[in-house]
Image 1 (spheres, protein in one colour):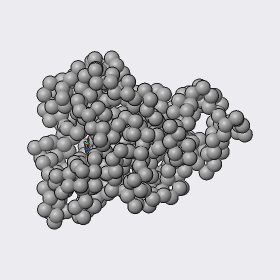
Image 2 (image 1 turned 30 degrees about the vertical axis):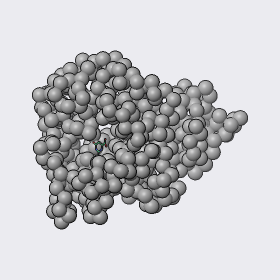
Image 3 (image 1 turned 135 degrees about the vertical axis):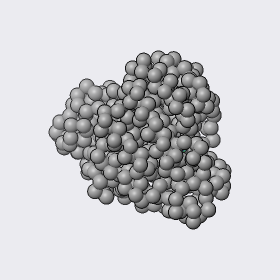
Image 4 (image 1 turned 90 degrees about the horizontal axis):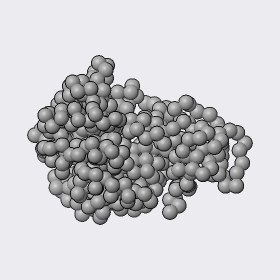
Length: 424
Ligand code: DOR
């Protein structure tokens, strides 16, 4: 099979080239290649497959919202060849049995699915989960995501323990729950709307605390979905001092502001919440200058009945896998914040490196595993939530004009998405 006529982009830059793929590997990169099967990439960018470090696939336990099959289909359609599945399942991914079960279910997924392990048993923040046993099964990302590890003592123990686990990263959902008691960003709009808030300092206090713990233990801390200007400044200062911290930002945090909640539409409810214009500008600046290392969707499917409630009662979270790339192209590339190659770094090779996934985000050259996506950066489209592969439809992007779409996805040499359609 030959992927023909595209612009090949990877960590080494860009060149016009065709890519030959045989038995799961890239076997040749050159010009005028021909093959029995040819995949059209004209006008498109051929990139290492995208990698999403933060998705909720809801299986086991919440299959009415998503399954590994439907979520991985959404991922493949979005251009992703690998995702890290968050542990807030039911039961939670907090022991080797659940991790093994998720891995087994993921064998037939349309992208590689790597379960994250919980830091604490039941994600309750009290007692460490068997992180070592989960690490033996290949788990590298540990997080209680959806909940913050509130206790500094427990967080320090987790970091001290993780130091003995090669490649392990402890990822924090940074929100102090004694401050983040409301439902949207605390500020002018929450006051106007009368919705209790979640202040910026709820996030920043934990980010600051965990930078101190990362410095003290030497274990890397990754901050999930960074959303405030203050958090970006704290991470920037910590990195300047050589403290081993990394961070991600979600597309909704560089696209929407708290003003979006003015219609009381629960589709805009998410934790951490949508912030102010200044926060959005700071997140974009953090992505541009390397303070924020990766873009991750925080794809959070919820059944319609738990979203069609009052703003205060609705579940937090929104879908992201099928719109992440387009929001990156519209809000970052077209807005002049960064180049398309820099966006792909944030969505492919940087998260692959950070998560320790050698088979993803690799330089496109002879011998590497063929995990690739072919993106049309100029295609304009309108999102219809009914057409999404996810089982849930909770996206606020319905009816929105988007630019840039994944066209083909190749997973270990198999074309799992062709011309925007899943092949199985
Ligand atoms: O809005 C959110 N939804 N934030 C989280 O951290 C968890 C997620 C979910 O699981 O629905």
